[in-house]
Structure formats: C-alpha cells, structure tokens
Image: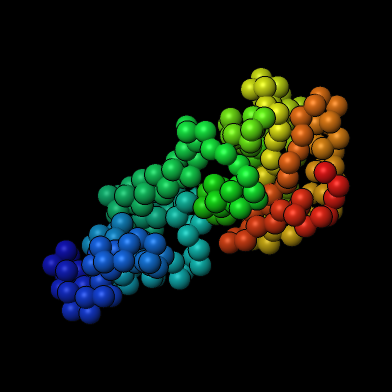
Length: 231
C-alpha cells in the first residue's frame, strides 16, 4: 500500500506534493485535503492518500466531521483502519488543545483578538456552546470557560453560571462568546435579550460585559461593534 502511495505522489509535480509543499511554503498554504492526506499517510491499492482524503471531505462537506466523528465512524471509510483513525483524532485533539492553551496570560484588546483565540475550535461545534472570557483590570485573560452547552439552536444560560466564576477569579470584566452551528453569526432576538440580561446582572455586582462575540462557520459578529445594543 505504501509503495502505491509513494509512486502516485512521486508522479505528481513537486510543487503539488503535500509534504514538499509544506516544507517549501509552510502548513498554512496546504488545503484541507492535503493536510488530511499527510495525517492519513498511506492510501489504498486503488486510492492515493490525497484521493482518500478528498473522498472523505467531499462526502461530509466539512472538517467538522473529523472533530465530531467517533473512531468507528471514521473507520467506516474504506482505507481508514484503527491506526489512521487514531492519527486523525490525535491531530484534531492537538489542534483543539492548542486553541485553548491560555496558560500564558493574553491581553484581549479587540473582537479580533477573541476571534483569533476561539474561531478554529468553535466554528466546527455541532451544538451551541456558551463560553466566557474572564479578564483582569488590564484586559489580561484570567481564564476561559464553557458555562453552557445547548442543542442545535440555543444554549440556556443563567447569570449565576456566568458570574460565579468571575467572582471567584476576581475578574473585572467578561466577554461573552457563543457559536451558531448553522454557520451564520447574525445575532438572534434571543441573543440580544440574553446579552442585555447579562449586562444588567453584571452591573449589579460591578463586573462589566465588554462584548458578546458570535462565531459562525468562518466569520464572526461582535454585538458591541455592530452597535446592536447599549453596553
């Protein structure tokens, strides 16, 4: 199998081979298919790793499948055995942990800073997660926590779930974040009402809500920047 894969890749122009392309241009210049092919490693007798990767991504339309699928679901694809399925899940988990690594206190200065920290993790979630960033008086990130996990369309959030960790951490402010599994980050009426509720609850205990960021498939919305409600 590996010989068949090596020959098929070797027959490609050098600037189209995933491994050589990564070495020459960096991983950010590889397509989703090329990155998955490198993780898979070897193809089958009939399919190269690139073709196998393309087949998987075409069938499921999104990298989200790789994140949410079980090992058994991955192995339903011909050419993906236990070893390859484990490699895929391990690579996804590494990416998730990197995106959540906040051991070094980061300074949050803009909605773009928030987006850069959470987009790659939250854009692929198939349920609505409500996440909160807790900040010190200088805007330094103390921690980031999921306070509620809902269904496809909503995550029920109570002010006490948001502010209990804030009080424990002596946070001066919070940034609210949640994802829309539909991929459209446009705030709903419920999103705006919840934001207002949490702003008012924060004022009572002296903790400011700086923004509410909604994450879509590849875009985001800052409710504060849009001027949709009064903070």
